[in-house]
Length: 563
Image (cartoon, rainbow, N blue to C red; front, side):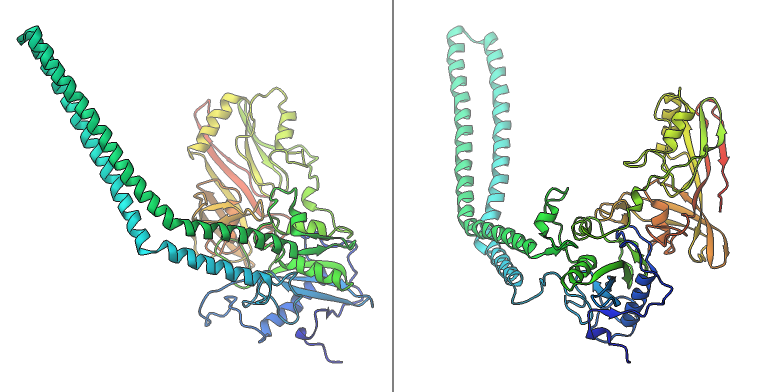
């Protein structure tokens, strides 16, 4: 029997081997390893994307195609129908080829691109208002009046300053005249002169009053004329604001999401009480909510899910072609939190309490400080749910120590040298060296591919990804400067062993600089955020060189990587 074309159905059957077991629980969408069935579904969808001629979208994979390149997140959900058949649903995030609907992909929850829908009509009215506001704002008479007002304000400031300088000069002159008159004139002559000087003072005060009154009237008249011309503009702006607010509220009400219990909530209900009570832009347009909604509406049981990136990487995020990624947090976490109610979902592995039962390895110790070898997947300081950390173990090891103890931190996934101060004075002196960047750090890492430049510098500013904390973005507008020097150690079996020398110390700096398309474009082995999850992150803080705060000698401590 010939296989059904991808575009002929939303339910795409999967040929599942008998030895492949269905997962006991549904995928936790914000941190997961794709199930075999999800990978099978993803491969089937990717084959379609490689061969399809149903739509034109420049994913940036064909160098011969010119124009804007836009990679896209796709999602697959393995489902079981009422006949117990296993298949998958496919969806894309946002719009694809300037359209919300493509055969074979589940529909959006609400189609904002429908030309007959209220949203497009409202959008057209907003555009008309914007055009009208812009046209009125460019009126020649209004432009002239604003220019006249600006000139009048400058002229007034100059005239006022000139008069005040003159008044002060004349006041000083009158003072000198009085002083001279006391010596040279009789009392009657002095009194006459004093009266004349007083009248002169009054004259200048009246000139100052008249100047202020004249310019106040002139400026107020110009402002009134401008206000009269801007009144229709303000009325249109108010109308636009009310229309925009009502349009947004009505749009949020259209995005109604089901859950496994058959309960429905719209975006306003879902985001009420969250840190962002106003739903972020494009909420509900990601692949995952579309997949859940279609499954619930058509009595399909969700089994597993995965999302992958297709196309060229964006300039900010780290995205690799065909690689799996979790659902976004800012928009999808509240929505999927509702939609997964009633489903048996895997536990959140991020909340798993990670502990280290063995004593930590002390690499160097004296009366003032020590260097400890932090294990991978172990916190430097206590977290919200996991209290066990290097800090807590050091508190136990050094019960009489005072001060912050840890002079710096390492990412949970990174292993290696951490510097610990045994008293506050030592801590402050060591911290000063970190702030002044006189501490030299060397990390060793293994990359997923080959680097052919022997050495170099990566300079990419970083900031937190507000949609997906704690991931970082490359951002040239709001990012903080981040610089890393690197040196290749060896290349073997398609992987590169490399030394990193961070000049700055931003969160995830080495991981992003390795994986980003404008960095080395090759992630570190085992990087669960910017690469492919493995047994561990192959990144280790191997060497720390600094000046001893008491003995003032240079300490150069090395702790070899366990990989």
